[in-house]
Amino acid sequence: MAIWIVLPILTLLMFDLGLSLKFEDFGKVFARPWPIVVALVGQLVLLPAIALGLAWAFKLEPVFFIGLILIACCPGGSSSNVFSKLAGGDVALSVTLTALSSVITLFTIPFTMSVATNLVGESVGIHLPVGNLIKQNLVLMLLPVLLGIGLHYASPKAAEKTDKVLGRLAFPLLLVLITVFYIQHHRTILDNIGILGLCVTALILVAIGCSSLLSRLVRTDARQRRTVVIEVGMQNAAQAIAIASSPFIFANEKMAIPAILYSLMMNVVLLIYVGIVRKR
Image 1 (tube, rainbow, N blue to C red):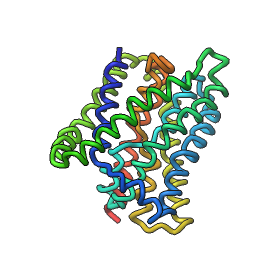
Image 2: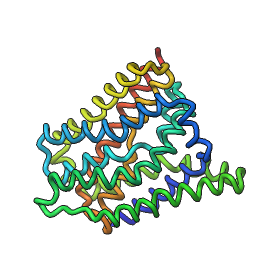
Image 3: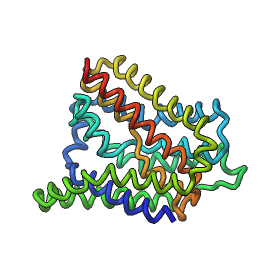
């Protein structure tokens, strides 16, 4: 089963994320509150709300409806830091947001997914075991991050070497994950790629536009604005796939298809965005 590929990959990615974080990153919120507030509102409130509206507008079937909300609930990991650097953004802000969202989503994902499941899932037999979701997030998300932070403090040199190796593996591992899911579900993906492709692309574009507008309203500088746009637009597909396909939670690999399509379109759209801002 693909889930047994997903879970180790997610654990490694979260461990790698922890290697680059410091406890001081969490304290930086007081030094730059407005960009952080805007980004967190975009990640935790705006994106799920946009996903909900689009899911209704596109009349997605319940499993895809919940899958779209799920990917909208999972802010991006360390990849967003790389994109912020490429875009000439505020990398320190990106790291702070990554640290905060990795902890906050432990609590927001169960709440948001409970709402989504109650809206459309119960009627078709899709149920959310909230306790199992919290336990899986603690084991696969929080624990590896804490272990990475611990290694960073215990042996900075070993952490740096490990981070270099895992950093190179992150993108290929995600490609392997997406390839495995595509091979298993290519018929379903191809049958639904029209409506789902349009839906996830609209989600990314609307999220980018709204986060940029919010950043301008609170008068963040250009570097901060680029980082906020990337942080709101970039989602953790591995986390969403792990939740959708986990035998302890939804046990529904079809629900992971929106996350797979979002991951593909996200990289295309944000690479175009990076190219545009670099030219400017």
